[in-house]
Length: 336
Ligand code: AHM
Ligand code: MG
Image: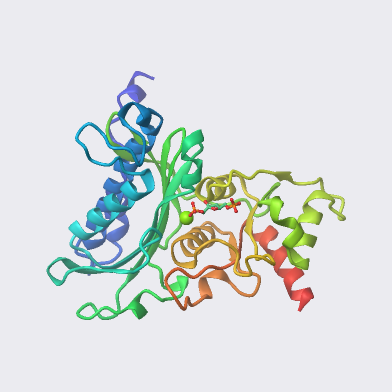
């Protein structure tokens, strides 16, 4: 249709979030402003990631460029971009980034009521071969704005007011939940706008895919081992599941959300708490899964009920389709 070629009535992410916020009469646009700054960070990182292959032309990370400045690694650069974008929004008071050992307390003059936890560039070991990577974020509301402390961020995932990720892949996709379902937006590079392309994402109740680093199998515990065995050799007459593992959490979770199935990063003998970080990896992804009708489990409890004791704490995680997570829960319950 000629009319379709010139569609101008697009649902941009800003318009979408503004619509959602009208449900809260007390809202004064602060959240929309914060989100706009996150979106800006995502666009910047997206453009840097797409140029990563050209980095050699401009000088490799660790080398100096023509201006004599050291070329920054993409994960370091992404972190700086997000920290600056978040602080300059004037809506944050406390930031926790995977890249920074300490939490960042925002200066009083720029302080707002939101706390943002984020992994600016997750899966960065995949950059050099062009595999999808992403940014993951979660947003909390501070308890005491005048005097935020580290306890303000050591909240269970249950208290998140929003979470999302942006995947830098064949296209740039931002998936977001503000607590009433999950929506996906795709960056239209010609407009520089994220457009609603995946409204109200619901994860299939049961999936045909499992996703785990099987190279760690030798060190798994009994319930994880049994679960993966059942994926390959089902005993209930169902066909075996397919294995898909990219090794980039955003990409693996994105596929799980859209196609269904289960993503596991379990505990093992070498890493009894698994690998993934509670605040900015496990929580946001678990929140999105639940909002899409799936589940997230740690091997002991519902993932969002965890209360982290420190900002970079890790936890095992099993997340995805409702029925598939039910199965792993049953195996852990049986193991006692
Ligand atoms: P990173 O934060 O150092 O990039 O590591 C996190 C990544 C996740 O994206 C991915 O799910 C996981 O590490 C893969 O780990 P492994 O290589 O052990 O399978
Ligand atoms: Mg990470």
